[in-house]
Picture 1 (cartoon, rainbow, N blue to C red):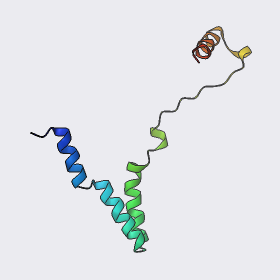
Picture 2 (picture 1 turned 60 degrees about the horizontal axis):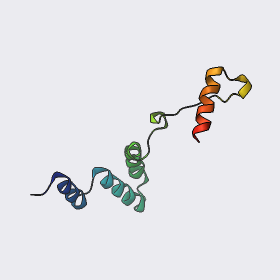
Picture 3 (picture 1 turned 90 degrees about the vertical axis):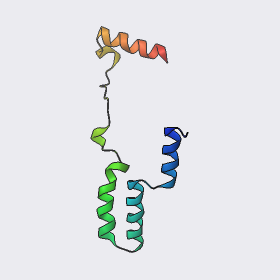
Picture 4 (picture 1 turned 180 degrees about the vertical axis):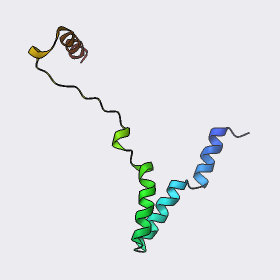
Length: 84
């Protein structure tokens, strides 16, 4: 008996995913100079191909001089530098 993972891999190799189909149709529309169709599909597929910046986790650290750091900040900084 075939395990579920092997079955899924076999299925994916045999069939195209919806996103792949949409991209194929978009490329076909571009080749045929059907720009409105291609653009419409591009808008629909973009969120699945390019993550939004606001979905990304961004950490920002304000840079201070050593003189401006508190005792706690200095201890943290020294610990980070010592680990490198």
